[in-house]
Image 1 (cartoon, rainbow, N blue to C red):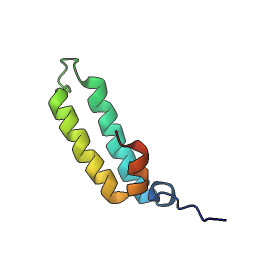
Image 2 (image 1 turned 180 degrees about the horizontal axis):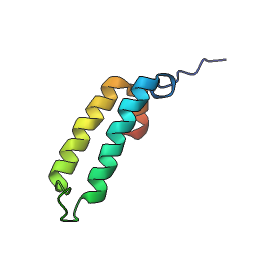
Image 3 (image 1 turned 90 degrees about the vertical axis):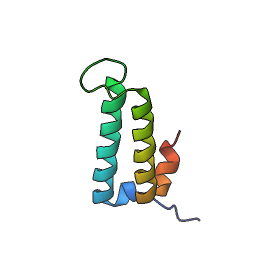
Image 4 (image 1 turned 45 degrees about the vertical axis):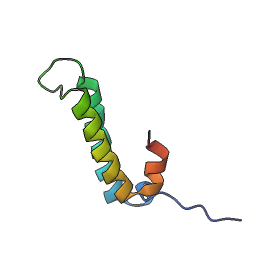
Length: 70
């Protein structure tokens, strides 16, 4: 029987907190995108910020990244 390799997201509390913070920020960016509010950073900035966040997540946990990537 093969041993399953768990993502660091599931086994490392610090990594989980950092990734959750990035995902929460992305959710805020997306929910405000196109609203015209003071928190609306625009479509292009939303995309570039998500690209940056994806790179950070991949560096912390490539297995978790593979599950969430576009």
